[in-house]
Amino acid sequence: MAAAAWRCHAYSASVNTFGGLDGAAEAASMLTHALADTTADGYERQWRRFARYCEDEGVSALPAAPTTVVCYLGTVLRRVTVSPGSLQNYLSQINTRHASVGFPRPALVHLPDFSWRVRWAALVATFLVTRRTGEVLDLELGEVTVRPDGGVHVQVRFHKGAERRSRLQRLNFDVLPARVGHYDPPVVCRRRRLADLHAARVPPSWLLFASPGMRREPTSDDMTSWLQAALQRLGISASPGVKWCGYSARGGGATALYLCGLSPPGVAQLLGHKGNDTRTTLAHYIDLLAPRSAEAWWLCGRYIP
Image (cartoon, rainbow, N blue to C red):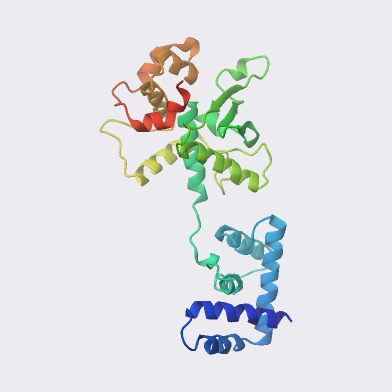
């Protein structure tokens, strides 16, 4: 029965591949019946094992995402010793089953770069809330929630001065959604990160911006390297004498708020400077020579009445 079921899938996949040319049916039948019964039976059993894995993980098997296929291979490697050349045996049945119903073959698609998705989200978050790098990197999943209006609510638990207080006091921020009708990638970026973690069923204590595979907590030095690599990807280079580092994203947010009309004392308050003193704000965070731009309003105009 298993071999017959697999031959049915393989036949459909072959016909779809041949694109309806004359002789496609006969060619598909020839290739399908070239499989030994034991091979066809093994493919069907492998497909059913993959389908059970997807059901247990709460993800779709048909169609399956490329990342689902890769993670499934991880469970295969956990169970048995498999050489790299043998992995194709596990991919073939997944590709064939998809092709049999007209879906793209997931094992032939490039994986999305989840590490960069996390890094972009961390940089954008630092820009939007103008907080210290360490405060952003210490955020946990349970401290960031989606608002009813589509914005994001953030509670900063570890912040400068908090360790000197007799009781824990959180800083609360609301990243408002963009104006009605505007596409809002900065908030979408944050919400996508939340959705990824909730889908992975991680605990509320999970660090929001811990990159996949990182076996330690991210640091300010990591943020600096992420920013420099991101700018390099975008083809942006610093002006002579300018050095970008982790808190440059915070300075970018402060400058954008100033360009949108927020007063220096108001920017200092958001930055958390003692007594809303503008001296440090103007000296190190607000670029008074920065030109007004649509991009600044697009990012931070959400905070201006």
